[in-house]
Image (cartoon, rainbow, N blue to C red; front, top):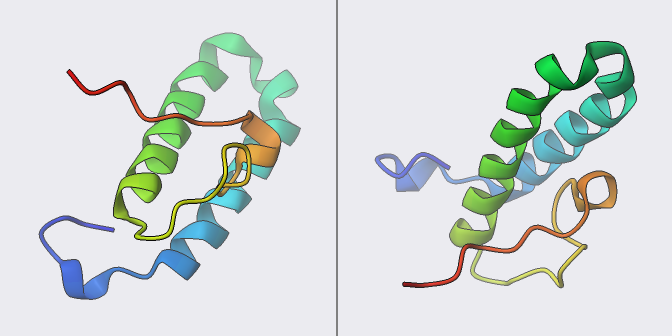
Length: 79
C-alpha cells in the first residue's frame, strides 16, 4: 500500500495481514498491558485507515479488515 509504489498495491494481501494483526492484538492485549498495547493499536488503526483510503470499494463500517476485533474505523472528518 506504499504511496510511492502504486503498482505494488495488493489490497487482498493487506486485508489478510490487517485481520491477522488485529486478531493477534486482541488475543495478546491483556498480556501486553495498556502501556505496550496502545502504540500497537494506534499503528493498526493507521493501517486500517490507509486501507480505507486505498480501497476503491468501501466496506461498510465495522466490516473492514480487522474491524471485527477493533470496532468500526472511520476516517477523520475533512477540514
